[in-house]
Image (cartoon, rainbow, N blue to C red; front, side):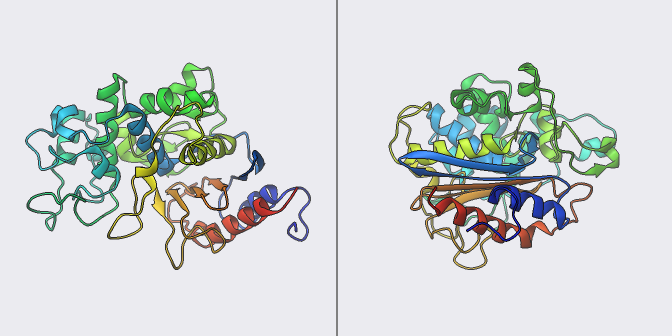
Length: 357
């Protein structure tokens, strides 16, 4: 059943409600479901390229899987990590937020003082940012998980070095997005520009030290400092709603053993449950209570949120993918209505995806 008063589709209804209720200036929503063949519905600002923020993280993890380097110690790929507590940590534990790193540190701080960024020095600082309680030898499953952008920044740079890319964004484009045919509707600003795609980009925050409203550049300050118009391991990829749904569909197909553009690829280690919480490796699992995924998606569902107001969730039992893209940080990150909106939006999309044609 369609929501009452809906003029077209559930995806359109969700996106228009998000904008109408002031959750974000711009929104797009969609679902995909596989019943033998894939069906899909999108609505809202489907042409906009949204800053996907941390929805970049699953792409980094998939790229690491494609590169075959999940078990390689960080220091073997990243000289800046040598001599730091992170030198011997394998990429899988970085991707699973179990490397013992701090959640965040402002690597971009020199920019606030009008100084340039020493990127190697910033990477060394990230690799040294071990939490006090994460002392001693690294356990086989890693330290207790703490969500950390730093681990992904390091893993993304190690990935780039391993495959000879300029940065993680270029590696993601070549290993993950381009094989799916998404090079023209997902990627970093630099990679999109190389394909003569100049937008339209959804604006994000009004940041005085960056010259005002950020548009056509990554919102995340550390990603901006480290890679500029490229992409870091934790942020930097932009995409349309169709592109995000295609990514989620490819993940589900691959997990189900369907050989597609990524070839025969093991992604099981990305989504397996791990001790100490819901964080996996590249994705987060659904919490038993109060999940942003809503109430309809099954307990084995996994996905990721983005700080700018984006989300991707995958229900492997129902064979359903849902996504919501917004620019809720425009004009300020203090606007947090997205928190209450995500569950009902995901529920509405999941419910529609389960209905017969």
